[in-house]
Length: 71
Image (cartoon, rainbow, N blue to C red; front, top):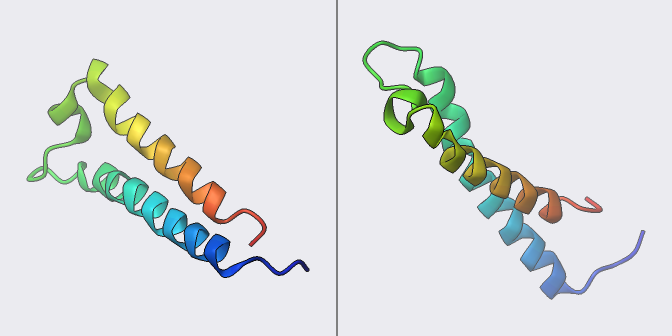
């Protein structure tokens, strides 16, 4: 197992937290949208506007994947 400099480890921790922080709200909102009192993602963004939250989730998951590399 290689040892990494502390700066690299710190950056990876930040990328993990940032990536999961970007993806988690959309993941939580998706099943909560099934509750009638909470608007769903489609109600807020529309079908054609789903590119925005899906892009945020994909970007967050990519950041988290970079942060969890060689974990």
